[in-house]
Length: 91
Picture 1 (cartoon, rainbow, N blue to C red):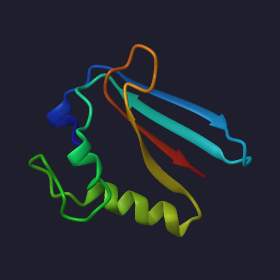
Picture 2 (picture 1 turned 180 degrees about the horizontal axis):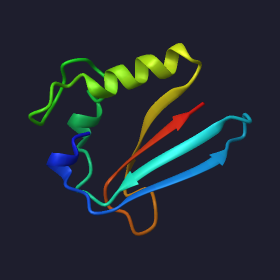
Picture 3 (picture 1 turned 90 degrees about the vertical axis):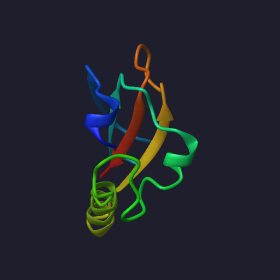
Picture 4 (picture 1 turned 90 degrees about the horizontal axis):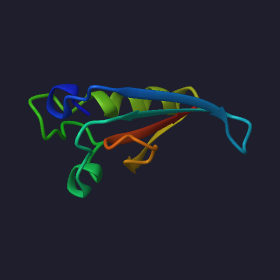
């Protein structure tokens, strides 16, 4: 996700212990969100709908997988008062 494109004014970060006993960190912004087409390619290398390289989320996912974690796109507007994209990292 490129902050240049969505231009969020607010980013909300929440953390909790999930049902599996793992730390789940959720990142939500108040930007315009991510389209279904963009969402299907978020973690593929070289896939970008912005001026970015399209490698960032791919690298994040690869590193998290290597240390036993994960990242997923939860959706748009998944937190009260937040209209943008929502991602969750689990460690």
